[in-house]
Image 1: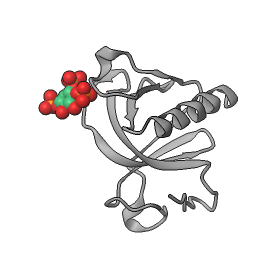
Image 2: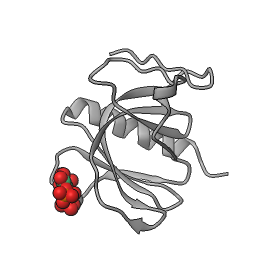
Image 3: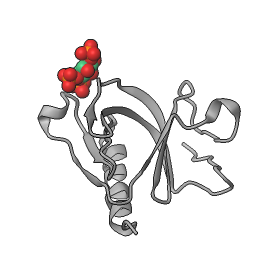
Image 4: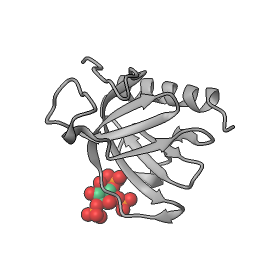
Length: 129
Ligand code: I3S
C-alpha cells in the first residue's frame, strides 16, 4: 500500500492501518475501544485517523481526514504489551510522557514488527528537550 500523506506539506515517515485503543488518558484508566485507524508517524508525532473502508492510502487535509488524536512520542516508551493487557496477539504498548497509554495491534506480524522497530527508534532519537 502507498503512503500518500501530506500533512502541513510534510511527508510521513511511515503510515498504515493498525488496530488502536487507549487504555489510559492523562493517567486515568479509560474503557477500551479498539478501532481500525490510519496510523501516521511524522517526526515525533503519531497521528491516528479513522480508517476509510480498507483504502490503501490516506491524505490528510480534507474535512474528513482530520486526525482523531495525536500523541507526542518524545519522552515516551514503547514495549510489547504483557498478556494481561490484551488477549490479542502482537500488541504494542505505547506510553506517553503525559500519561496516555495506547495499545496498537496488527494481525500481521511483519506489520507490527516494523512498527515496533520504527517506534522504538523514534523514541530513542527524539529526546525530550
Ligand atoms: O482488557 P479487557 O477489559 O478484557 O478488554 C476487552 C474489553 O474491552 C472488550 O469490550 P467490552 O468489555 O467493553 O465489551 C473488548 O471487546 C475486548 O476486545 C477487550 O479485550 P482485548 O483482549 O481484545 O484487548
